[in-house]
Length: 343
Ligand SMILES: Nc1ncnc2c1ncn2[C@@H]1O[C@H](COP(=O)(O)OP(=O)(O)O)[C@@H](O)[C@H]1O
Ligand SMILES: [Mg+2]
Image (cartoon, rainbow, N blue to C red; front, side, top):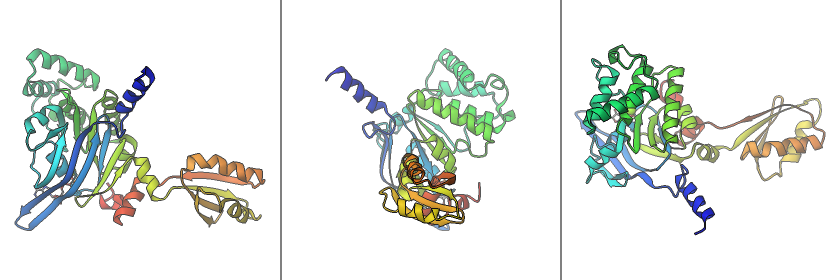
């Protein structure tokens, strides 16, 4: 193999989302039922997942969809009722202890002890993972600096703001350099600034090569942060892929043109665009026309050039994209926003 193709191959292998990358999580038909006096709840109903090394993978779904249950199974905290799963190449059922050493887990509520300081929590976590006191101190100091916790690391955790607490939770999760980090709703309930900080930190971990599996019920989080995602509803995956692919499957993009309504511009645009392969549909609007197209950002210049060549005046132009909520709506018949009670 020559140098160039070697380089190419290794670049491909580390490229997040590449089908060549190793699967760090693989599940097949994962099921979890809960029995209670009121009957049986099927929280997870046959989940097939593949999370590849080096990606930020999102698990998006409304409250009660089965995200936490799935995550607790994958982190060995709860047995599945059925199905199989490997995590970091290890069978969950046969090798739970080995799995635990390779992963970090930040639960929805976090695990910090409120009556100790952040630094004390970190030191204890280090010792739990078998670090010497000195190693733990060094690693804690490193994380305190890195996550900007100097101002509060030596205060009791019970005095922390939500954002400060969340940063400590993340630090606890990565104390032992896990290969794969699980974050359960890392930004729920945080103010926008604290959310942005957590996003930055997740991206920084990803840049260092950590694989991240996070759950969220915020579609902007899934969209902006994740390389790939699975949408889950009522314990079943309804869609899986990159945010771009998922949105493109749905409707394509919408180019809205504002036209001179005194002229016959709308008819002209319609006849010029109707036969173009990338145009799926044309709809007249109150002030012009809407083109439903595939890959709007690529075809927009061509649309504008064509109309310009025919001296059709364009008053305004807007490119709109379907959102992940449109994807959720199409697959489930409900809006994600409404399913979450507007949260
Ligand atoms: N220990 C339990 N006992 C009974 N039902 C449970 C238990 N844990 C979760 N559930 C139910 O399973 C479903 C999925 O819950 P969960 O995984 O927490 O959803 P999410 O994290 O997506 O909000 C919900 O209907 C929830 O009420
Ligand atoms: Mg949950």
